[in-house]
Image 1 (cartoon, rainbow, N blue to C red):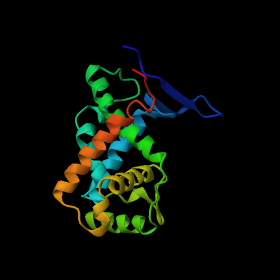
Image 2: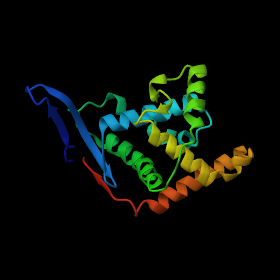
Image 3: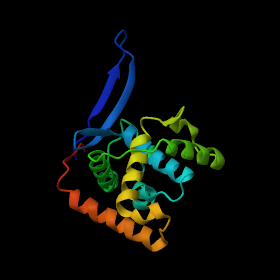
Image 4: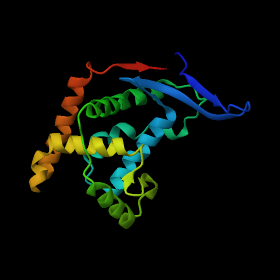
Length: 189
């Protein structure tokens, strides 16, 4: 099994390494590292904390659970279980790339609502920067808005049932299957 790409970045004025990461795969034109995968997993968990009805969490929580992602370090060789785990994450990142190609806007009131919810539920407040989401969390929220608007249109009238949510999860999985061949991927293992 080939080794993943490792990126050491040194300070310009010394030999000290200030950042080191291991690339795992590339989706569309975005290369994702262990650090990115760990942050995404945490962001999805944080989204569920402040928004328990999260459709993104319902669709992908099983894909992100399991595996030893939190234990993996830059120097760790990926084993077959790691590769299978990473393969389960690829559809999430393909849907994320697909949603970025659509003009999804976040209502100005949404960060305020999420911050209030995060405060009340004692969730991670570091995901907010003054009146906005931090840069690494915003794509997850945009994906949430995308899947809800696409697969739960009745929600805008306050009419989504458990059955509607189940259908939305199936609809999202079907979309992922249909875009699988449209969005390039490259693995680094």
